[in-house]
Image (tube, rainbow, N blue to C red; front, top):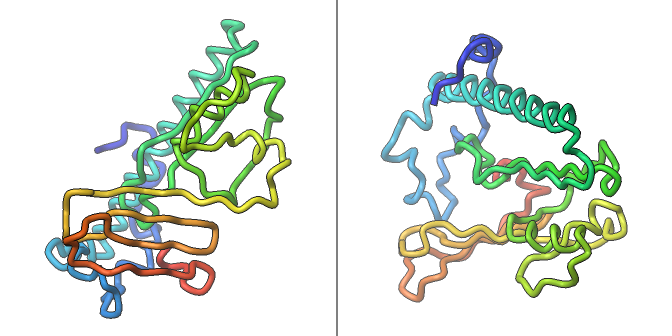
Length: 210
């Protein structure tokens, strides 16, 4: 993936980028060391290559941000904003240390206050359909997801949340499930014949695993 101009030049000096601390971690005390690509693909442990990847990644994010803004401005100019709930999100990060953290923006004029930020609640895409039902007053929808409305309006600010991520459920050599709360991250297999063990990380005291 290559960003177009003028965005490519905005972050054109890779030396200004800061690679994740985790790329130099030998993972000698991790039960998942053999599942890490750096043992076989050394480019993912090369700080200079990682800096180049990060500069391209930032440029792509900036380009997407610009075009999302253009789309929102066009919707406003066409007077299509009223009673419209707009959601922007993504599937995953580009393996820069935060691959399971993705953008989630919701705009609903008259229902969601502009500038509202909910940054300390792990949530999931599975919550979006239930959230849409809630805001459209369509009643409760039976789902494993949970409406995000209470976190957006602040009524659920004291509730704990968690998100679940699944990866390669057919592979016995890697953890297949991650369950993450604000403080804890639990990694485990989902196969009876798996060769990996469970691992629990304290993100307050070990933030690099974030």
